Amino acid sequence: MKGIVTLVLATAAAAVAAGTEETWLNAGSMDIHAAKIVADVPSSSFFEVPVSMFEEAERRLNSTATMSLQNYDVDALSRNRFSCAEGSTPFLVRAVFTNGSTGGFSLKRLDSALWVSHSSLGASTGTHRSALLVCLNFIPSVVYVTAGGAM
Image (cartoon, rainbow, N blue to C red):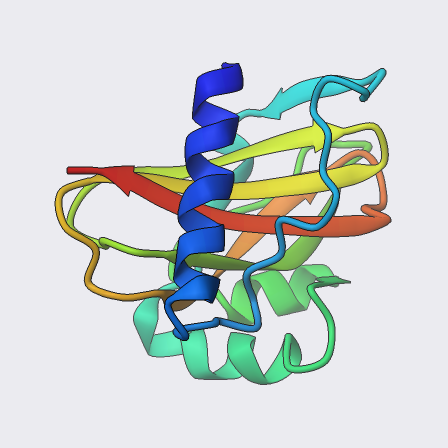
């Protein structure tokens, strides 16, 4: 796991150093080993906002990395009948990817923070924005957004 964290952070740092900085990337001072709560967010609790609705999601996330949603917002930003389990709240969160043809998103809770990561195989096609709808049973204090891959 430590190797994956290092790879993802190194890839995000390389994108910044190469002058292709994406403002939605945020590796911050994330330290997975210092967190007291480390938990995967199940893949059944989130999905990527469809491309046809991304412009609206991007507008909503213009000045914030996450925002809580109402049920009618979830319906407006999705094509399927997605709903959160009792005791959880829907959030719209920033995400990025470097190769949309492969890989996938994974989400982790790190204490009160949310880590949104995309890992893929193959050459990067650049850093691209996306957005996720996610059901959480906590309010994220910060959202770390990273992306990386292997060739």
